[in-house]
Image 1: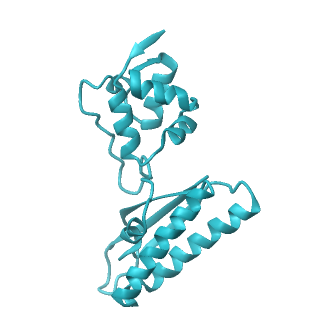
Image 2 (image 1 turned 45 degrees about the vertical axis):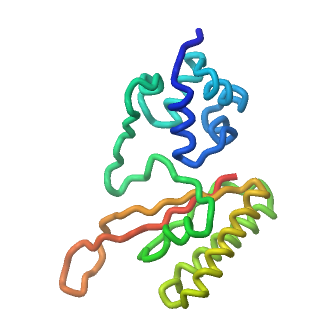
Length: 192
C-alpha cells in the first residue's frame, strides 16, 4: 500500500545528518532508487515509511511534514542519535580543540588497505589533538588543510568520518578536594 509522506522532510533529515542518499539507503535497508523516489515524489510503502522513521529515530507520523520534526533528547552520558559527517578540516578541529578526552570507534574495515588508511587518519587526528594548543597559528592552518585533504582522499576510497563533541560529567579527582568536572569527549566514527 502506497502512502504520501513529505519527501522534503526526508531530504531535510538526511542532509541534516550529512548523509548521502546511498548512506540512507544502506541504513534503511532500501535501495537508492527508493530513496530518490521518496524525496522526489513523496510516495512510499508502509515498510519504507517505517524503515525511514526507525533510521531517523522519530515517530513515523512525523514524516508527513505537517509538523516540525522533534528529535528525542538523549540523556547525559548516553550515545547521540547520530553523528554528523565531517566534510572539511575545520569540522575535525572543532571537535577535538579544547577536548579533555576523546574516543575513536569504527566499523570493521573491508580490507587490509582500508584498515591501514583508517588507522593512519585516526592516528593523525589523535596526534594533532594532543598538541593542538601548543602549535602556532600558521601550523594550525596547514593542519586544517591536511585534514581536509585526508577527508577527500578517504572519500575517494569509500570511507567517511563522522564525529561529534559531547559534554559528560566524569568522576575525576579534583585538585580542590572533590567534584565532577565536565569533560568533552571526541567521538569519531569512520563509516565504510
